[in-house]
Amino acid sequence: MTESQIKQAGLKVTLPRMKILEILETGGEGEGARHLRAEDVYRILLTRGEVVGLATVYRVLTQFEAAGLVSRHNFEGGHAFFELERGTHHDHLVCIKCGRVVEFLDEAIEERQRAIAAEHGFTLEDHTLNILGLCPNCQAGQPRPS
Amino acid sequence: MTESQIKQAGLKVTLPRMKILEILETGGEGEGARHLRAEDVYRILLTRGEVVGLATVYRVLTQFEAAGLVSRHNFEGGHAFFELERGTHHDHLVCIKCGRVVEFLDEAIEERQRAIAAEHGFTLEDHTLNILGLCPNCQAGQPRPS
DNA sequence: CGCTAGTCGAGAAAGCTTCTCATTTACTTA
DNA sequence: TAAGTAAATGAGAAGCTTTCTCGACTAGCG
Ligand SMILES: [Mn+2]
Ligand SMILES: [Mn+2]
Ligand SMILES: [Zn+2]
Ligand SMILES: [Zn+2]
Image 1 (cartoon, chains in turn red, blue, yellow, orange):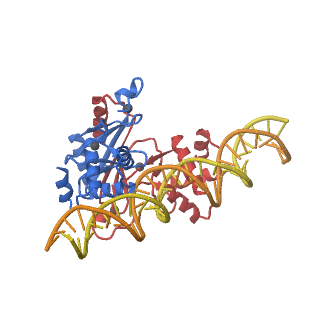
Image 2 (cartoon, rainbow over the protein chains, first blue to last red; image 1 turned 180 degrees about the horizontal axis):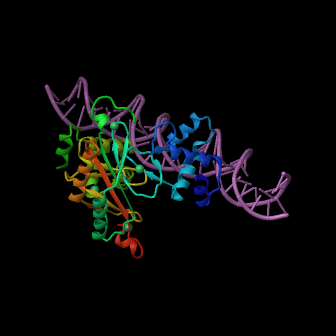
Image 3 (cartoon, rainbow over the protein chains, first blue to last red; image 1 turned 135 degrees about the vertical axis):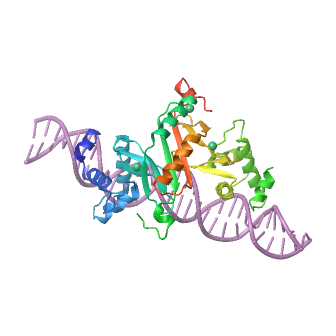
């Protein structure tokens, strides 16, 4: 339940926080867009007539990240994407044309990374792997912006 | 030789371009810092008393990238890093404390990525893999900013 | 040497993100 | 339920990296 997640994070249960968490859960509109920019979250709130400041969206997303509720990704292009943390690590396949994101997990790659960090005497804290290419739609005709 | 590289790219051989290329080659000062931000390149130029505009640094780095002379990386934290292109692809192990960068190439990982893109019907255009952790120095006592 | 397209530097501007601060709100206590 | 208080909010200013604009300058060519 969303309320308890916020409480657990040591944060007050406020309307903006609940709305933002709900948008991250449902992906906003019909689309199940799991990876949203702060601007996307803000725009969805506006569409619904909710009055939440953009500064609050950034602030809350950053707090949720610190609390482990969401994770932040820096795909190519500068702006950060946020997604609800589901406890299971995964990496991303990103379409460079329409932005579609497919998630995957490959244990062989994970294992090689652990080995590589160890070989160089590094501790392994985190990693980011993004595979960039064209999705099936975009290889064919018109991209459906999905 | 640096001049011919610039010419080959279809660019005029100008002083700012040669200086910037030279900095990317030598890493600026004594340190062989192979991964530099635009700001770093600009600061090294200033240190040497060279008068080159920051806009020119960004413009030239972008041109070099388009020409295949340098590659651009977006490690965590927003700003881009540039390094001289040596023709051989590699990924990066980055120290989250001192910023030290170690390069590596793992054919098993490369192969798995090709397979994953194919499984999902994506073409494989590019990928970025950054392993984040603490380097040996930073695990021990004081980090030497190397 | 002179032409011209390409390039430069400086400052303005853009675009994303964070900060400031007066006002409002959630939670605690009575 | 009514205060009291610390936390949170919203609007706009500000910060930062990167890009754009434009008048001045220059490399490359004949
Ligand atoms: Mn994801
Ligand atoms: Mn490198
Ligand atoms: Zn696509
Ligand atoms: Zn280190």
